[in-house]
Image (cartoon, rainbow, N blue to C red; front, side, top):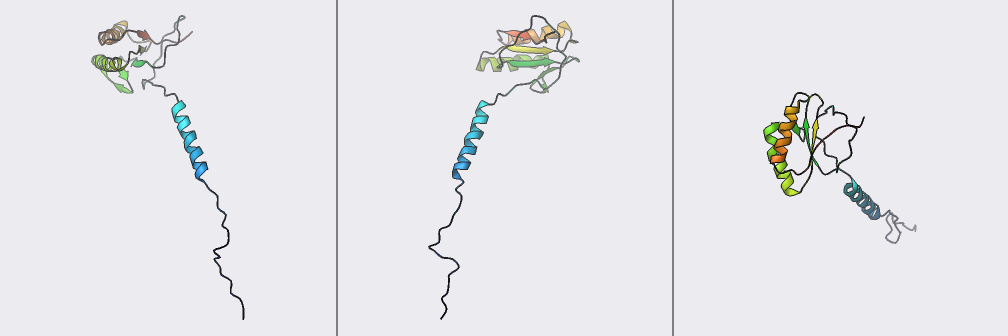
Length: 135
């Protein structure tokens, strides 16, 4: 009589790849890149900044407010107007003392810049700066 062989032998050793350490390493790398990524805050509009020979870099944790060539005041990609500057700056300065950087287009009138500067000062900002480019 012929001997029957079982197709699925319980004694046979199965070889499989353990992917758990690989998944752990991928998650650790993901966490590393998330933690070390620097998020740059932008105003959301493009302005032609004036040139200044005395320009220097400021800290990255600043409140950025832009004034477009048309005179629109923008924060975080949305138009807030001159009247919205005080509320936003007051709220952000209350959380942490941060400088305000005004990115005014070179075609903007001094009067419009002064209005935005005054609103930021009245909101409690201690350091207000004008963004320029190096020549």
